[in-house]
Image (tube, rainbow, N blue to C red):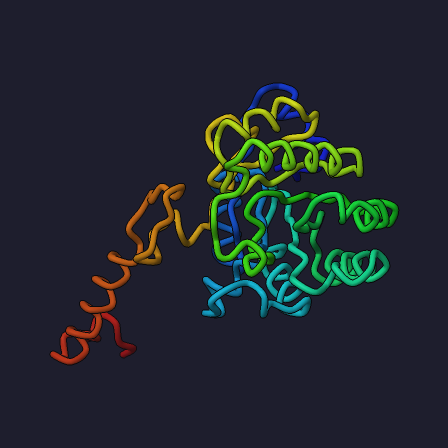
Length: 265
């Protein structure tokens, strides 16, 4: 099975083929998502919330990202693995952004990195590219900046804000990104940005006109009671797990499991 690369992702966009991306944080889930034919796996800093139980993504460290990216990379045969640069690992200087990106690739086995922000990241992006590492951009609701936005709110809702996002997207493309995540923006704005760029856009809460889509895997599988507007639940995994564990607990307490068929003679 051929491993997907940046060139494959760009070629999919040129052919009009929709690109799929999901988040992964561990070996087992990564291997399942990979076997299902997912094009890209993002080891997102959302791990801070859905794996580590924090209220936001800000507490995720570079070491966290490296460790989880290593696990995901071990489970993948064909999907492209994207490592997420956590908060504080790329904002201080372009040099630090390059240094941390190299670690995420060299130690974490990522094949590209994602970072949040617009034109203010241009120097960092160019430095990372000079180090031979592909870069995925991220605009709209960028969770690491949720304090600045006053919470997890839809971005680009006014004409001025939409124009700003479009200009920032063009700046990121000029900086050399190979793709751009658009999160929680009106579908009309995402459509305009997608049509203006020659690199693929990956939407999450950005409507149907992006070149690809990404969801947090735990959200689309129904791990949590909360569901954002843009999330489609493809499975109620929490309900199924609850039922299975409740049955296990009952059988152990009633001395039904294990019987002799599950025992060594």
